[in-house]
Amino acid sequence: MKKITNKILWIFAVGQFGWSLLSGVVTNWLVYYYTDETAGIFGKNITTGTLFLSITLFGLITMVGRIFDAVTDPLIASWSDRSSYKGGRRIPFMKAIAVPFAIVTACVFILPQTGSKIVNDIIVFVTLMLFYLFMTIYCTPYNALISELGNDQKNRINVSTYISFTYIAGLSVSYLIPNIAGVFEPSLGKDNSVRAAISIMCIIAAAAMLIPSLLIKEREYIESKPVETPAFSSLFKSFKNAQFARFVVSDVIYFFAVTLFQTGLPFYETKLMNVPDTMTFTLTVIMTVCSLALYPVINKLAPKLGKKKIIITGFFAYAFVFLLASICGEGVIWGIVIAVCAGVPMAILGILPQAVVADIAEADAFDSGEERSGMFFAARTFAMKMGQAISMLIFTSVVSAFTVEAESGSTTNPFGYRLTAIIATVCCLIGAVLFFFYNEKMIMGKLKKKNAAAGE
Image 1 (cartoon, one colour):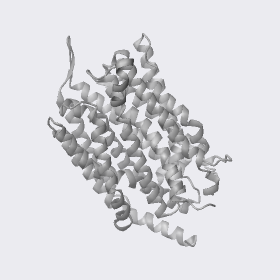
Image 2 (cartoon, rainbow, N blue to C red):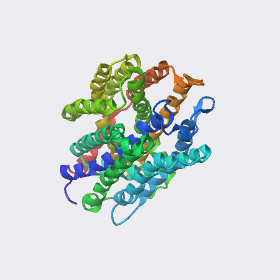
Image 3 (cartoon, one colour):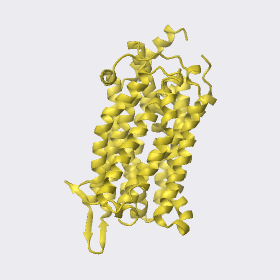
Image 4 (cartoon, helix red, strand yellow):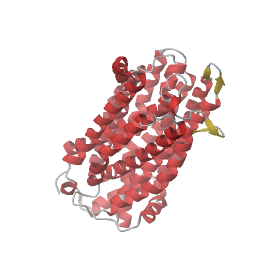
């Protein structure tokens, strides 16, 4: 086997930029462009009111989507773990789905333009289901490589750091959509300028996702054997791992809280701080720079203090950020303060959770003799999408509950937006408490035994 170098890890990390860019397009702008009473330029094409019990169309779609994911996530993970393709267990999936994943993301915003709202609702539903399915097909094998390329603690921390950087970069670039749309608006109009901006993002994302697929020869760096355990038996084994179960519960809460914040960010700025949505990218750059400045610190502290203590600190830091969002007033200074403070938890929770999953997967392989890293990361991908889905349901339902319909149009009480930030604050505090039960000492002890047995 060839030695895994930092160059290979950086090439691998470029794929994270691609899929996080696509995820950011949907997570950050779907609700904003489809439902906001002033910025929701696509809202005229679909059903924007509540359907029943304050549940909106997007809330219903995301609920159904999670049931869909509950089946597809373990199936894709098992398919990857059990595969014996010439190109490896992971890379062939990534190469095949990168372009379709980007295309379907653009279709979420481009296709629903028929004269029937019901038909458009169905199109939105189908394209979002495909979006989540294609994300699973790319991300599950991709994330499994975090453990397999991170074949020791140094590489594991390094690869987690690199993909955290590219994840933030992809997410940050997705906030450029209003800025890019502004360039095209004079010639294309408001609706099509946004669609053009999203299409450009999707082309860039597809190219980024293909880079590791084309440049990394998996079989030259990773020696792996196909797993024989069936899909749902493998999933059950993963959740039966007590430490992983504890991690996943806190992880769902983390993704719920942070997605609630990301979905609400354009609204916090335009409705509470009274600044234009084009400021979103500027504030995200500030947040990213502050986060990146802390990467070397996190990288050095993690081996010394342990990942658990630092992750818990990240939860509390995010809780403080969300609390600031809930009480913010008018003026861009609030956005700058929140962006600077958010850099701390973004650095921590961007790097270390992936390394924790890799630790657990490797320790489990030592106990069971089966390398099922695909299934462990599939479970985490499911946790991510579960948290995102619940947050979109809660966000749209809470905001809808504070929206008043009138002949002149609909208006939303600002407290509805503040309440979403309060909910995110409480959830982060709960996540911090739950992660106290993760036994990092036991996991690291198993890894030491594994390394000793391998003569490392």
